[in-house]
Image (cartoon, rainbow, N blue to C red; front, side, top):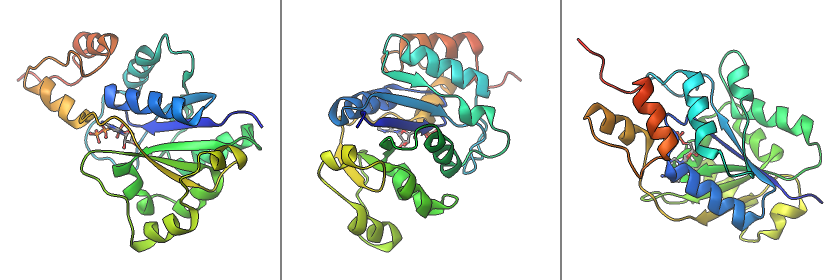
Length: 215
Ligand code: ATP
């Protein structure tokens, strides 16, 4: 069987080293053929204003340039309307009917999964790989706790042996960086150096996308 494909979705508003380091460590650990970065088009759970989709996409492209195993997949941005993970997975599954697909999520995102559209189907379409984030604990009760009991595994080989269906939780190097904090830093006229790739920092400066509106 070919190596699994990792799918890493997010608003990436902006992309930062917390995302990139997580993707890199999971790529290595899980021996993924590639990690596809999927910037969200019109996120259903998000009300705050975003940098324009095209700019978020450019930032993701700039961030992964030079890392051949990191691929930018703009299918959610090309789709009109809300971008639901279940639709994205159905789409990718059509392209790769037999392949192991690993949906990569931070623990905060994983805990929100029961609020996602048709969330139970997600586990039949892909494996879910959860990266620990600082301060978040794996669920042991509620609907996700039950799903963890049925589908949780500590055995990496299971992610290669079947195309979907398992949940694997793994601690990655903890980088306490969030896009929300980065946007706040810009608003406070602080420098994002060493928190985001230099090319992303430059795009943020030249576009002025997170700067406080001038009165
Ligand atoms: P925001 O602060 O705007 O909510 P964010 O920094 O959490 O953004 P997203 O684009 O919403 O970034 O996250 C995409 C994915 O990356 C999610 O699965 C999220 O859990 C994960 N993620 C975000 N920041 C980190 C981090 N520092 N370490 C590991 N995973 C992260």
